[in-house]
Image 1 (cartoon, one colour):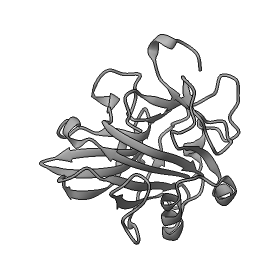
Image 2: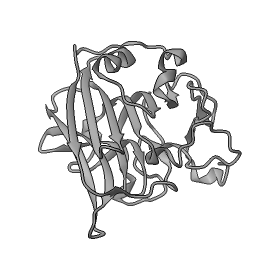
Image 3: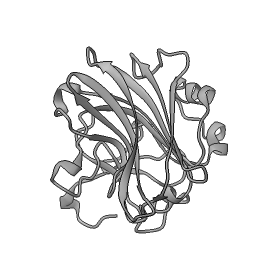
Length: 243
C-alpha cells in the first residue's frame, strides 16, 4: 500500500482493548518485520525516514540514501554507565539505488543478551521474495535501554506529532507489518515473507503483538489480523483525542 499519511498504534489504548500491550513491548524481547519499497527519489538526501518506529529516542526500522547509496537501519537508544544516552545502530547497505525494489526486513532486540539482529532480503515483487536466504547482521551493546513506555508505534514515519526533521516521513509502499515477542530464524523469515496470507495458528508460538496486511480496513484503521487488538490507526490531528 502506498503510504500517504502517518499510521500509528498508541502506547496505551483508551478502552484497554489490546491483549498484547504496546506500551511495555520494548521492555520485552521484540521483533519487527516489514516488507516495503521506498520511493528513493522522494526521500531527501541524508534523511532518516521511518518505516516502523517507536518515537522519542527513535527505535525501529529506518531507511536513508546518501551519495546514491541506499541504507536500511535498525536502531535503539541506550543509557550508558556515565548517563550518556546514545543510539545503537545496525545497518546494511543495499548498494547503488538503480531500481525500486521491495525489501524484507526483520529487526530483533534481545534484552538478556543486549543484542540487536537485522535480517534482510530483497523482493522484486510485493508478493514474493527473490532471495534464497536472508543476510544477517548482529550487534551487541552496553548500557540499558531507554524508557519507551509512553511512545507510540508509527508506520510510515518516525513521529507525526512533530513537524521538524524528527518526523522522518517515509515515501513509498509498505506491504505488511508484523510485531512479535520472539525472533524468527532464517527459515521462518523465508516462510513469513513467502506466504501472502497470515496464519495466526502458524505464528502463535512467536507471541504476536500485531499483524497488518493493509487489506482489511475501515475509514479510520487497518485491522490487526493477530487478534491482539492492536489495529493500525490513521493519524489526523483534526480528529482530536479519539484514541
